[in-house]
Image (tube, rainbow, N blue to C red; front, top):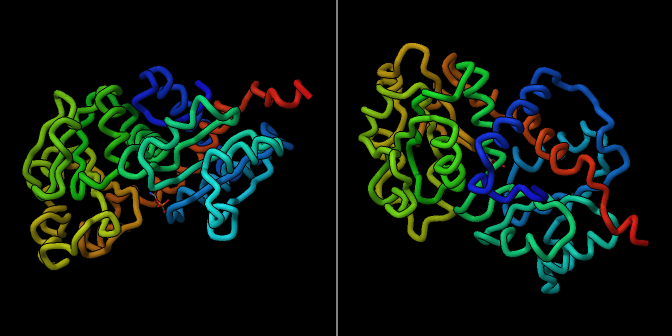
Length: 307
Ligand code: CP
């Protein structure tokens, strides 16, 4: 495959290969490679990001690539240039891959056939966030030695989560039993939920799961202010200290972050012994190295040979 747009496009084998290569890089923290030496890649973030944007940049630099960081506010986007025209412009300069975060769901899919460079989805609206899902799966695999047979509970603001969008496709494909839990107003549309994925009450989710994955309340995507106070949300729908005590022995806490401390998760749990949240961030670099390397290796841009 030329692009990484969504995990719905990838087979179990393709995901397993990316995870295997991600594990390879995870075992070599800080190692500098020359695999993409001299090749240009660009990061275009039209929505805010800290960990995805910087871990892509670290991954690109660890592979030896030249990195261009596109800033929408100081680019010709402010003159109305479209993402398509922006990508064609970068292509003409020899940029071989574009990592894109956009508000517009499905934008990368729309562009996939009309551009020559490799597109990597760093989050499109509430649709998919494939590299987040891959790094989550790598983190689970490191912890449990397998994905097959694990029970993962994803809890919180599911409706506005692009992370969930990728997990709904990927986890069942990898043999994971998936439980969903959240406030009624934040549940996904029923049509989005694949067969076999169960909706349960929060206490059941927390008592049953090997992985308790909390999701952020994404207020920036809500049309109205939160209908209850943050304290009440925490008590009714969050991972409180009391609920964390109900977790199975060996179960772990995950969260894609950024975290609303004291809302979906008690602040003391974020860096607790059962939390893998920092590990997820570390694995983000390894997985993104695997993705970049897999897409770009052996595929020098055709424009070079056609000159
Ligand atoms: N998890 C995640 O995508 O974080 P950022 O928005 O900081 O990139």
